[in-house]
Amino acid sequence: LFDLAIQVLSSPRFEEQEHEKLRRETLYDLDELRDDDASLAHRFFAKYSHPGHPYCRTGLGTADSLAGIEIDQVRRLYPSLVHSDDLLLGIAGPLSEDQAHALASRIPPSKEGSRLPAPDLTAPLAPTGRRLIIVDKPDRHQCQVVLGHLMPRYGTSDFDRLRVAETALGGMFTSRLLLEIRVKECWSYGASCAMYRAKGQHYMQVSLAPNAENCPAALARTLELFEELATDGLHQEEFDFTCSYLSGSDAFTKATARQRLFRRVQEEIYELPKGFGDNFTSRLEELTCAAVNETLARALHPKDLCVVVVASADAMHSKLAALGLSLI
Image (cartoon, helix red, strand yellow):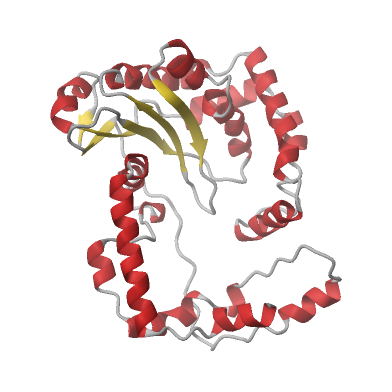
């Protein structure tokens, strides 16, 4: 099985028929994305939230870019993209270290000089102001809303502290967003907050799906909650409960061999210290509410947000403009 996988990885045939089939499938995926309002909101957020950042570019491409990809280009580029010096082999199972190294030795070396340079993941200067993008979907009775901005890189002490705030704002059933937007006001079935993990700085996104009538009020209250978190931080009881929740749920992220292997691979890819994932609960115990709130005051920028709304533009434009957002 390993030899077959390596053969597929190191010397694919790149048949013309398969190339055209995959192109059609990707075009179909693009059509599916346009039909799915939630996916569309996240796609536009990635595109406009931090222009110039490598993470603003999707690997899915566009209809025009897909049309321009020729099979010979793929054949020439592939050895540079999948280089033996960049491959990482992870194994979970009843194998000795010697057996694992023996498998790794069967990976054929790539040609000299074909390796691509590492990409520059430095984030450009962040845009300022609350910028609004309305993705027009006529006759929509439900809206999709995504807002947020770039955050500190995964693996930093700031990210650990912000993970507590992320969970308190929108990562559990008793989070601020869910209690306010869903339970109290019944504006949206779901309201969540998530920080993305990557080798470079990535985004924090708040997501909700109110109906068209309640969208302006739901967005206004979400902006208030975001600003309140940046200004006032967490209170001690909320901090203690969230840390307890994170500590208790951590066991479910390393219950299987596959999960534990993924943690090791992630540490290598993201250039994190060995055992970084396993040590999260220990680092959590060292956090204080004051330290989390200090980081929130530095890292959150409630006045500099990208806000994407998928809705009927004619019906929603003037209502959202009243919230003081700048349409782009």
